[in-house]
Amino acid sequence: MFLGDGLEVQPTGGATGEAYVARRGEQQLFLKRNSSPFLAVLSAEGIVPKLLWTRRLENGDVITAQRWVEGQELKANQMKDSQVADLLSTIHGSSELLDMFKRIGNEPLVPEVMLENLRIQTELMGMGIDIIQKGMTYLSSEIEKVVNFPSVVCHCDINHNNWMVDDETNNLYLIDWDGAMVADPALDIGLLLYSYIAEQDWEKWLHNYGVELNQSLRDRMHWYVVAQTITLITWHYERGQPEEANKFQDYLVTLL
Image (cartoon, rainbow, N blue to C red; front, side, top):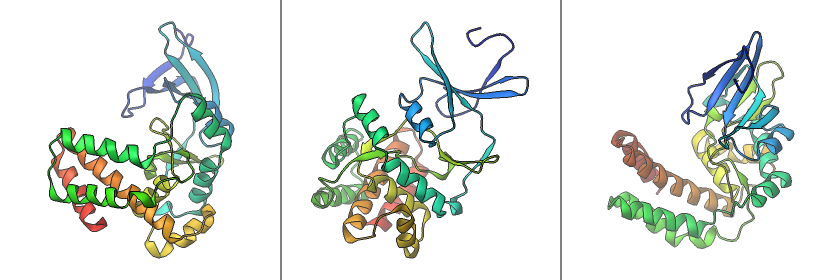
């Protein structure tokens, strides 16, 4: 009723249950309930599909409508493309996006806080697993190598499923911004390179992104990948998924 007669709305099947496709005849829209408050900036910079309108419901919920894009998710082997490096560089270099984040109260995620949160997580879960303790020791001993670096807006979930190419325009978009934070860009870069790019190709990928591969960046990327891997281990254990947790434990062994 709020959106008007003749509009058919169906859930898209996403993990949050807050995303919908709306159809009226040939017209389609992507709707989301309580989307990121900086969606307008993301849209203006061409990082996500165009924002068409925003409306507030009587209960306080906010509905956003974006242009429906017929497109394809990137495959893992496409993450090496220069277009990916270009878009991530644009995101990390956006002063408008960073200003918006700061205005709505997002404090930078500094390594000290990240490490303390991991300590609390692992202690609450009683995780005395040797490899996790070894990982925590590594993070503590190497933390001086990752402090006091400039912060940018990081997506924090650069899985290839969140990158989409518009079939019509060939534009690349990075979607699903619910977990974004202000942090060291090495957080995003490290997760992407370690997950998708062969080490011998890191220098080329980073050249397209616009930075040099030096020892400092290597140290920071490695630190954040170790921290994220421990986070994923605890996440899967919390959800009763020991097999998935074990996969990341094995990966942590290789990292350390």
